[in-house]
Image 1: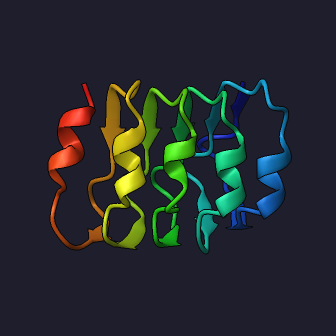
Image 2: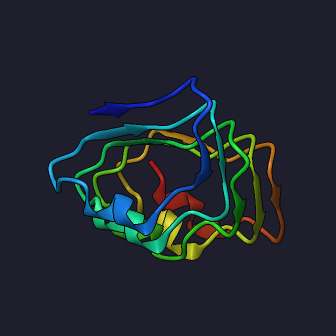
Length: 118
């Protein structure tokens, strides 16, 4: 478990974050000043059960490969500057039970695949 929430961490989230141990279960980086986009390599953390990037300055799209994080149960991307549509792969997260992406600038419709999220 990595908890770095409620600091003044700034800059970008490097792609190398996807090289963290494959057994990492929780990554909490909320309440910081992280900017730029969410790296695609983050989806390499397939054992992750909780990912909290809320309350930062993250912009850009939710990575289209987020559905590869099959173990994810809690996803917090709220209160950032994310934009664009909700990627269809997000509906592959069938173990998810907490899903916060509010207070962003997302556009488009909500897929009927939302019914996959039990």
